[in-house]
Length: 198
Length: 59
Image: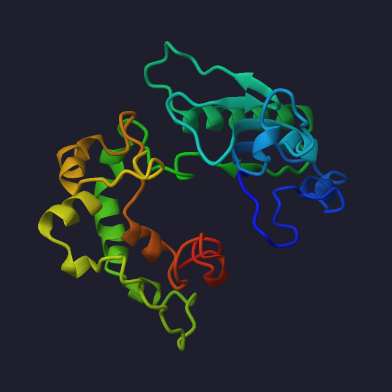
């Protein structure tokens, strides 16, 4: 967290008096590990000088594998294991943090299942690729390209009709107005449509 | 990264490099229309906290 605002409590400091979710589950289950994005450490507490009480492991999460801050390069990420900085492999050409993070998560699930198979578990899992920019794993774009065009293409028209009949939308819901700063899909020229929904 | 450096982006540059979007050579976001659509039925995005767009589950 980079900034506070002029309102009580909005100062980036989570008070010790506030209960943290791991504390609520630790009696009956494993305390959850945290994977991926953690944007909750005050900026001036993110160095190796600490303090670390607002880092995931300081909050009571049993393990952390991810990045501190709003986002990171997914091909060459600045990541931590607990509080230890991890250097991603420089020689792995197809390294992508999503996969690395998933592999770490799967490894730990297997480990815990081997040691205590009856113990319930929970993962805090926040992939970084959607956190800030929109990077894609190599090859993934071609797999989902058609789905993106048809599914998100519908959504880009500001079309909420997709939710009709799903039971998730109360019949009397009114759509909020679209800001003038957001162009309507139908008014975009062909080049914009090509870039916005390839 | 042009957004973080307050540098206006020329759409022609984006169009010319659209095959690179999402790759290691760019740091792009998705177009704002997607954000608004994904936040439906809430208004705005998370920076306007009072309207819940981006801070509550959309449809």
